[in-house]
Length: 137
Image (cartoon, rainbow, N blue to C red; front, side, top):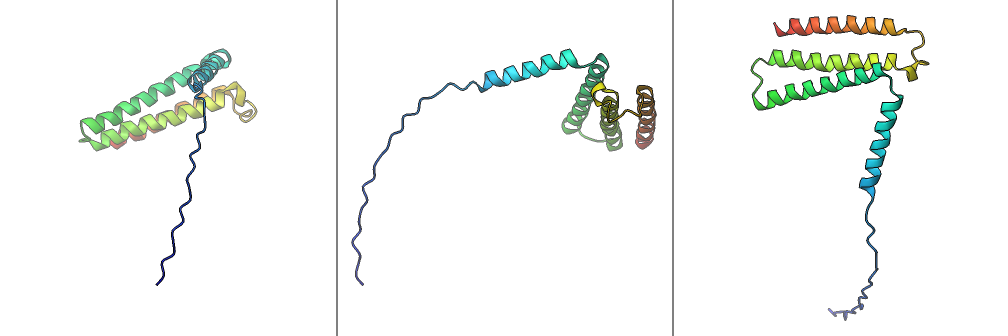
C-alpha cells in the first residue's frame, strides 16, 4: 500500500468589518403599539370597548381559575370544569356579540339588528349557565 502525500491548503483568514448598528426594533415596536392603541381609542365605539373590557375580564377569570387548580388542586373537579367552561363559553358568546354589533362588520351582519344580536347573546348565556350549574351537581 502506498500512502499518498498529504497536501495542505493554506488557510486564509478574512476579516469582515461589520459596523454594529444599534437596533431600533424596540423603538419601532413601541411606536407600532402606540399607533395601534391610538387608533383603537379613536375609532372604536364605546359599546365595543365595553365588550372588549368584559372579554379581558373573562380571560383574567379563566387564568385565575386555572392557576388555582394548578396550585391548590382540583378536588371538586366538576366545579372547576363547570366554572372554566362557563368562562370560556361566555368569552365565545361575547366575541360573537362583538362581531355582530361592530359597525365595521355591518356588511356581513346586515340582516341581524343589534337588538336581535343582544337577545341571542342573553339567551345563549342563560342556556350556557343553566348547563354549567347542572354540571356541578
